[in-house]
Length: 69
Image (cartoon, rainbow, N blue to C red):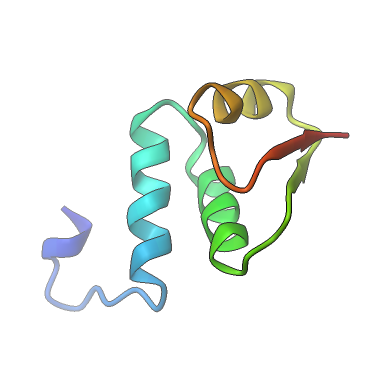
């Protein structure tokens, strides 16, 4: 629905699209967006203290790899 809005023009279309896919897979949207932007920036890993997010991201084989603090 977001992409059909006439005034919606995300700066990072690919990252938003990827984050929405992760969200559909059960991840938190904000976490998914941070992860997607980290991947776009070619980060080596993504660090989080959120155990549930790390578990879901690993299950979905998210990139960059998740490191739990």
